Image (cartoon, rainbow, N blue to C red; front, side, top):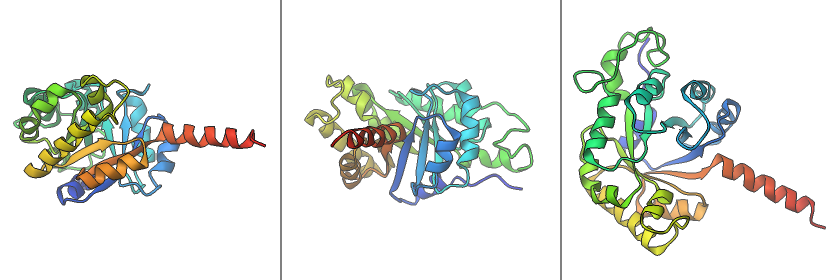
Length: 255
């Protein structure tokens, strides 16, 4: 038995454009259903969702046979949280609020075993297929995909340096927090924010670093893809549910 290959990382490195879905419903059943919707990847958000490490594991299990490869966003750039998510089998992590190369390097080290990093060693974890993947300690570093999230003006000023940190596999731009940082809270569509988003992806494309982003409308998602973003979350599961439910309620009450 061998360590599982990280399909998302392989496809990202191959230059594919991958369409994803943001997940905040905290439901294994919903994740299992959505993982077969045809998306390339799906992110389980623990930063802004009421879910912890133990709650993420059944989601990873439920969605493991779908077309969507799962990523997890820890609540913070914390070595303990990172270690625990890796041990339950998450292979792709999106680390929020990375503002400097030093913070990016700390995230890399937290995902790597010594002597590339500081990740603690455990035996019978889900990540190592409960110890049956005898090559896990040798292969884990190569199969982990680390994405770091840029979401402030300060972080943008360090963009090329953060992207150059060895072990950072992709840069994810957070439009909502970036908008707030630039003085446009609640308005990621503001021209200044859109200009910053376009400039960021042009910089990342020029240096060959995969770029990701979250969109909440199909128009935004397609525009970001056309700008050159490689992995685009085209929607949020909670938003899709609310939109469908609200529309149905209005339709049923309209004569």
